[in-house]
Amino acid sequence: MAAHFGRRLRKGATTTAVAAAAVAALSASQAPGVTVDQHGRQSTADAVPTPDAADGADSATGNSPYYTDLPPLNSPNPAPSASNGPAAGSSEAGIPATVLDAYKKAEAALREKKPGCNLPWQLLAAIGKVESGQARGGKVTADGTTLSPILGPQLDGNGFALIKDTDNGAYDGNSTYDQAVGPMQFIPSTWAWAGRDGNDDGVEDPNNIYDAALAAGHYLCRFGWDLSDQKDLNRAILSYNRSTAYLNTVLSWLDYYRKGTHEIPDGTGPLPGDRSDARTPRPGSTTPGTSTPKPPRTDRPSDSRPGPEPTKPGGSTGTPGTPPPSPTPTPTTPPGTPQTPTDTVHHLEDAGTAELSARAGDAFAERISARAETDAGKAVAKVRVRFTVVGDTDTTFTGGEKVATVVTNSSGVAVAPALRAGEKAGSFTVRATVVGRTVPALDYRATVTERTADRLVRIGEEELTCTPGGTFEQRVQVKATLDGAVADRVAATATLVTAGDEPAENDEGPFFKDADDQPVRALTGLETDADGLLKLPPLYADDTTGTFLLRITTAGGATLTVELTVAEDPAAGPSPSEPAAD
Image 1 (cartoon, one colour):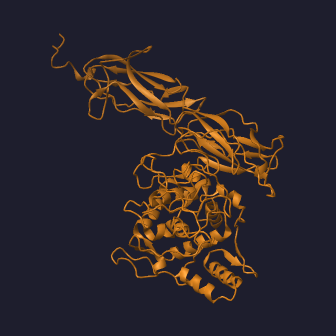
Image 2 (cartoon, helix red, strand yellow):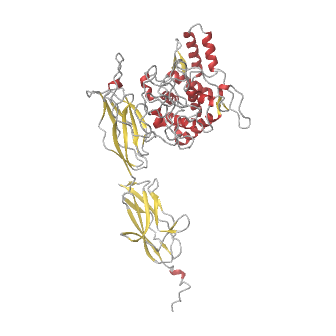
Image 3 (cartoon, helix red, strand yellow):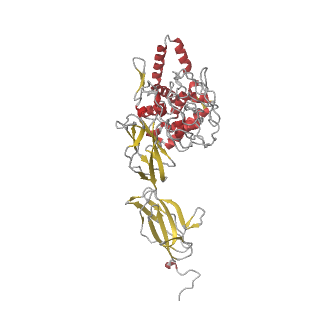
């Protein structure tokens, strides 16, 4: 197995340098797009260089340590058919049943929600292998929850990113620093906005493989990335843990799983043995001389969820589901530590954002821009600014995400992606924060107005007539416009009224029918189609003759009154109850 091979390799090498070069060569031989230079260093096409540890707050895991074991050189057996049962291939190719089901379920969900992402479940399996050894070999309950918490080391800046506590210990049991949590190793501040409910139990739990796999899928599919494209695939993996070595390791397992895998019983999966930081214990375990992390808090209700999506890593504080407290004073940089541009940011300023308003379903014409400045008001370039949509709204940035991170330009300005209004009208907030720096957030107010129409016209000129007790042959159809353009998906009502200027509902004459074939004379919840057209259900007549009025009204105040006539058919002669005329 990979872990055994790694140990044999180190034992037989005369120096650690020889061992490192051999492992690099093995990784390169198995990772698509990976090469090794004359010095044995790995490189990947279009890979992003590993940033400083301080930037870990802008990744899913906080750049926490990961398992470095590589797949075996031999290819796994092809996946078995349903009739043949599990294949007897390499144990490394086996994935615990519940864990494998979670990956495949997440792939199916993303295929429906974001088909353009082309997320393969094998990518989730590769990340799950590297992050937690497939939930410690599949040690999960039937519903996918790990039998015990899987925790990474505390991110205290000592060889790792410095990420101070953002969840008051709710997820990781640590109220001083954050720790990566669960089988997919999300840090709490990322989980607060990226968490999903993958097993439909009403809870978003990072310790549940169904929830964590679905969250990882959405995380990898943000920004409109197409994972069938190698460049986007590399970007997505690097956003999970910003290390080229991490990228190479995940790509190796992705290629391995794509060649075939099979299901094995929960709890029987092989455990990896090598970590990217040898001094770090496996998540959830301890070694002599290390501190034992506090267990996660149990006073959080089992059905509680984080509140409105807070900012991504480093941009939120407080317990999920509660408003963030006022920002704490910006910590000073330890003496002798080189300052990064982020360290010099004192505040964010609005960079001239105009009024943010759009009709439901439309793109906002104005884009949000924020300027990072020093205490003296000088612009700060190359700083990550995170924009987060906050509040009860279905408005998102282009690509369907509610969070976007943008680097400031030479003028210190970061321009957020365009907002696209959802269907829910009302106001919400877009919050700008500096990644890796605690400074007051900058809030922008945005408004989505309902879809409206200012004019309604009837399609067709035929008179709408019917005999008593009959059915109107022609159905009423209208077209809605706004400023001369099609008014699509506009809410409308249709009511039989007593008079043209009276909204009172008529209790006799023509009527519609409800689902139970009962007469109704007012319809709500109507909506124009993509062409601004609205075709009403059939109309029926009772025994009352005369001229009646149908009023159609849309959001925005457009109104049209249509005449309906109920009269005896002259060609039918007198009714049986009436005497013939002399």
